[in-house]
Image (cartoon, rainbow, N blue to C red; front, side, top):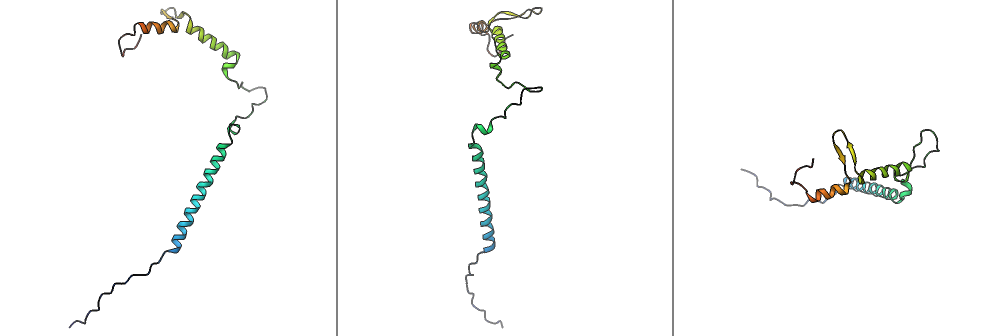
Amino acid sequence: MTPPREPFVVRQEPDRLARRKLALVSATSIAIAAMATASAWLLLEADSRGPEAARAPAPPAAGVGTAERTLIETTERGLTLRAAQREALEHYGWVDRDAGIARIPVERAMDMVADDPGPPNEALP
């Protein structure tokens, strides 16, 4: 014969926290948040210094190997170049006389295209 069975008893185990793991995760999270905050602060400080901090260093003393550091539009060479470009846009002239290619003023060319635009989706010669 089999011995009588004991009744099945349901018990709840005591709640236990893995305190070491919890402390490690908390410390790691705090450290990451502190590093992210410090990085953001440094980036904002670098950005708030303004254009003075980003300005190029002063040019070296005049001498051999130095380049002119001004806008080309304000130099004599730039003004001469701009005048030559404007002259080419506003006057008739030859591009290649032997091939029969001439240059016409840009305003006249726009008027010609506006008067007779040609077939759509076809490149102009």
